[in-house]
Image (cartoon, rainbow, N blue to C red):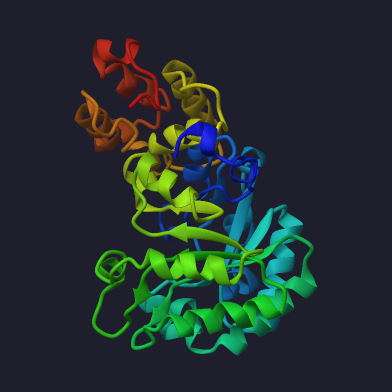
Length: 341
């Protein structure tokens, strides 16, 4: 899809470009980095369970930088009252959206009977969504799969979405695969079940006034451009982790930014942020982890990753390591900007 074919709804949709919630990946430091690359992308937290919020360190789980807006809190749980209370906390902390996880296939969610397991009980999910909607004024959304284990027909996901639509849910982030909890690992569930974009497209036709965001298998601008022809938005997961610069390219395509990201300015922003976080006790290794894939496919990318992974250098706890690693790329840095294909 070319720029002139992008509708105003696509360009200005709050969900046009989203970065998926990923456990042990999309922490606040990763989200701050992604915001520097994509000024209007919708960023999602890692899944945070209701138990962690009700009984754990709320500030550790919920604090974020104001620069991250718009940012959504993704919750994991199956008790309507606990989800409503957690949603209230999220709204109080300033999140722009509360998202219910109905798609994660990890062992953790299976033991707790939430995540993808929730798709077995659409009425419970509807009760959870309604409880959260009654508790907060920000949008309550759902991220889900097409089905679970043996439930492979379109009628299943149509009924699932219909149950949530009936209680007022209007935003559905659909991972275009089924979850197979019996026999596949969480990693395999990201790749092995076949993508079925046609079923997600049918959802959009059946619920035309709902916002339907496509997730799964999207790795490049061309993939997303094709998706925008049918859907209200796209959500990237591992692609944004392994090749963060794709967020710049997508933002330019959506006219969310006029140009590429100046490398020197980006590096200095990262150095300043890392320095401020380290003064609050955050280890440098945690802060640089989201940056490792930044120069994916470019000369010097291996040197960059090696420099930011060196245990001795990280032990020195000096944020200027980021600048030094960038300088190790050599003269190529003067010829390129982040986001150039």
